[in-house]
Length: 113
Length: 110
Image (tube, rainbow over all chains, first blue to last red; front, side, top):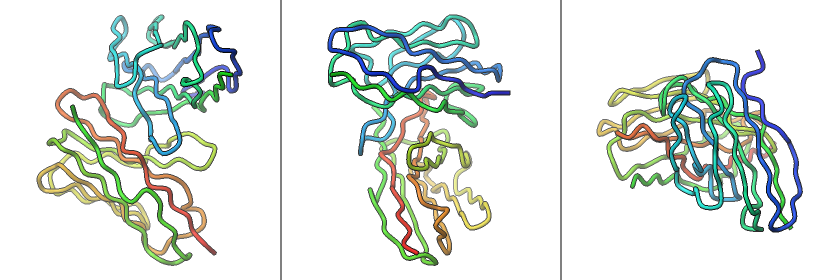
């Protein structure tokens, strides 16, 4: 039982490049989330998926897209990376939206140069 | 939208001293959760509070939810070096979309 698995753990991109962050959970959770964490800013919600088949914008969605591929997987795509997207990205899941224990992945440290 | 204020941003304590972090919301909450993040790690769930005036304890940690369900606190008694990390509250209102506070970083001096 791995919990929430994120890949990759580290990534360096050049401005304008694209990439997809992968996230998978094996707990049969309905809700999944993508956060970014910047120093002194806490965790800010980028996108979330309340249940399979739905996705919604969070607080800071600009420059990102998501796909809820199936109940297990929720990916985050940067179409044209910018230095302002340098951050640590966390995927999380919970049984229901905003309720109960949320499990976080190990994080992806992304640097855009 | 929902705003969540968490104070203080940093707290230095001597080992054995107590520590408290506070979380305040601009709106009435459905629930509030607390997480701990060790340096270089990921957030780990500590507890969820749901009821008005609720108090829960986990060993040296005491969590409180205000009567109006707009504020919460986490108190650690007799801190240890293992308590080092950043403590976050995550507040959920009627939309059930969680909003995290900016966190309180606890530094414990031996």
